[in-house]
Amino acid sequence: MSTQFLELLAREASAVEFEGPIIQARAAGADPAAIEELEQAKVEALKVRDLLKRRARREAELSALYDTAGDLAALRDLDAVLEAIVHRARQLLATDVAYMTLHDPERGDTYMRVTDGSISAKFRALRLAMGHGLGGLVAQTATPYSTADYFADARFRHREHIDVAVKEEGLVAILGVPLRLGQRVIGVLMAANRSARPFHQEEVSLLASLAAHAAVAIDNARLLQETRNALEELSHAHRTAREHGEAVERAALAHDRMTSLVLRGGGIEDVAAVVTDVLGGSLAVLDDLGRAISGDVGELDAGVFEAAQASRALGRTVRKGDLLIASVDVGGEPLCTLILRSDDADERILERAALVCALLLLFRRSVAEAEGRVRGELLDDLIVRPGSPGLADRARRLGMDLGAPHVVVVVKYSGQRERAAFWASSQATVRHGLAAGRGDEVVLLLPGTDAGGVARRAAAELTSSLHSPATAGASCVGVQDMREPPDVADAYQEARRCAEALIALGRAGDGASAAELGFVGLLVGDGRDVGGFVGRVLGAVIDYDARRGTALAGTLTAYFGTGGSPSRTAETLHIHVNTVTQRLDRIGRLLGEGWQEPERALEIQLALRLHRLGHTSDAKTVGPGTI
View (tube, rainbow, N blue to C red):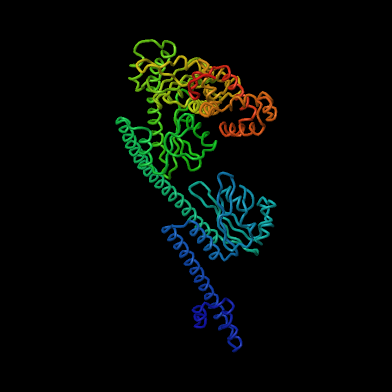
């Protein structure tokens, strides 16, 4: 072989340059034999050139496959490995575009997974149904396909959306090989050119090798992800089991603390303190009426009570905003509700605390009911059998001193007898009194002397508890002999008539004593305390006349008798009108402002008439003497 051809091979000259030595020989006038020898040398040199070129390509292919295998061995990012495979396919096959589609088992088609060299967004978003287009046919048959001109090739099922995307990308020649895992096709690896060209068998084999590597990469990534998921699930399960065990242990310790408190005589406030010590935050405990037993709840909206109802129905804690709510019922009726505001959402501890509080309330209710029966029986005996022996001793055993001043309160209501009885029993226990239920009324015997104030408070509280009007009448109990029980029966009758009078007057839901009803009290009061009524209404004027020897009461009688005319009053009394005016001014200062208002004037006139009739000998504020 000529030295010239060896030099051309050494510098990897193009095929055209191998004609140079022959052209030079002809120009130099070489004989035909020499030129023939050069032609043979050229042919041999070109064969060597092709061999070297194929070996160089094979070396590059092997290097690419080796690099791909290395990427798989150090697999960290599946996307990066697949992008590298597609990029190498494009480089080794010297195509304009390379891309990979994967099978979608849910939709039964293939979708574009990785592209290299693509410029069309529509092409990158393309999906191929099985058997449609070249890629769909490869995926369906698991067989490589190639075409030098896709649009002129009738072997493929052309679809408008596929052809539009391929035309937008400008592809003409396409080669596709299946991605196979065993007998299953998971996708297609393809290389394409924007001009017509055939694909040789070596190129098909190379693309198939890269596809095999891609399939292994995808399967390894799947196995690795499944392993990671399994490890994560195992770790999560272990963590959950540990947290559950810790929560159960903490709840058990808190329950032991609460139980110990109850056994030592602790109350709901102590249980609430344990909960806030363990969980932090603030806790409020509500009774069956939504009133706070412990803690400060502030303003509660309807949603909180709906959540409490849901908690009772579900038998577990319910969340409402930043609040945890646990509620317990007995026989379908709410017993207690715990409302916790805390960052620690351990529901078990709150639920156990709710049960402990419910048991405490049930115990208190049982004790109160038992004590209420005893107190109720004593009050019944004081009303029905006042002369029964041992009443004072029975009262002392209940912590009551019947010799002290007491007030009898009769509260009339409708419906919800059990709740009314529970309220009355609670009032008697707290205020060291007695309570009894009698038909549509509850009766209280409470220490004190302010009959009107006690009646109003009782009416307001029971009205709030029942959510319906409760009307209370009250009367002070008279004590004649400290050694004998007080006369509760008479006071009961007066208090009852007072409550009935309030209802008749349209004042249902209110409370008052007979004394506060004015002249109406004369109609309902026991013993008709006329002197007391006169003294309350007119006592200041009568006392003034008694001390000063004046005639203010007579002037007042004449004034009302003449229709409130000072001049006619002067004529009736035969005194100067200025004297009448001075006396009326004095009367106004003694009786206070508003004494001429119609209602007040009516009571004053009634008191004047009773005073004139001489029924004031027992009035405390009038003093001895007759009128």
